Image (cartoon, rainbow, N blue to C red; front, side, top):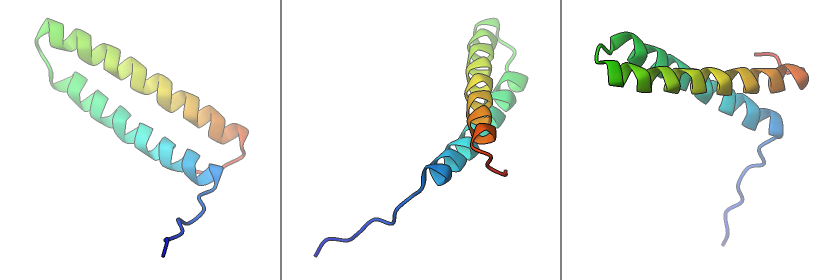
Length: 69
């Protein structure tokens, strides 16, 4: 007997992705604020920029889809 997976709407996928991106952004911000080594700070700053870009992109998609957060 095969189990059926519940259908997940595109809106739910987007909201889950947005929530995950927000957590990633918070982690990247925390890491950036804790580091002192120059090389590590460089890595953390690139990571933070990427996390911001991802979150911003998903937020724009959510607004375009008229999703309430």
